[in-house]
Image (cartoon, rainbow, N blue to C red):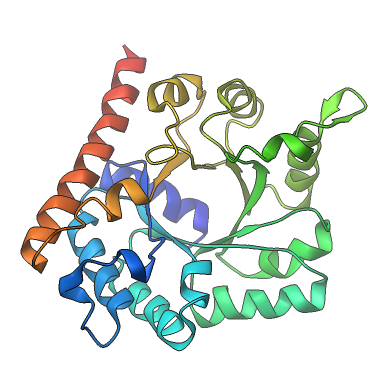
Length: 273
């Protein structure tokens, strides 16, 4: 199934624009899981079980898994195995290199692990994204305008009369408009309004809500289309640090995910009125 079809079905079937970010830091895993053979994998499994009713997909920031070496890579595999098939998966890898190297990244994340999509750095140009784009039914999220304060260092530099982030978007769309979406930080509401007006059929992955304190209301109100997902990580997965067992953990984390999903849907519904 083409990713865009799966993406739209996931939004509709789950009634959710929430993506849960599995940025799993082993030092933040509750104590009752620390004695497991693979605490990262067990933690993720419980998070997925608790949240799958309220989310349309999951984003794994691979830095947390690479740091844990063999256990981390094993945790990626086991986590992907428990995510429902109708939900999207994102490898938050932020890769981008010369083509022969990127081909290996594509083999790793899209072929071997089987992620549906991957985040990509565009700085090295078209050939650094080409191997990802060659994969059938896979998708690329190009970093366009990020939520960190360092975004101001480069992303707003003027190229002629345009900021660099706009040039990146225009160029990336020309590479393959059916296989490319964009990462746009929630704090850039003016820019979110512009890109969703200019590209009404292009999905967005929006970080910066939750622990990063972006305004959900301002973000939703700035959007001109509904092909978006909002990532929340720490505010959900670390909402039960003192849980004593799996039942308690799942109840708290599930409630946090439900609250996040419902807040998004309430604002979307309010905007329609």
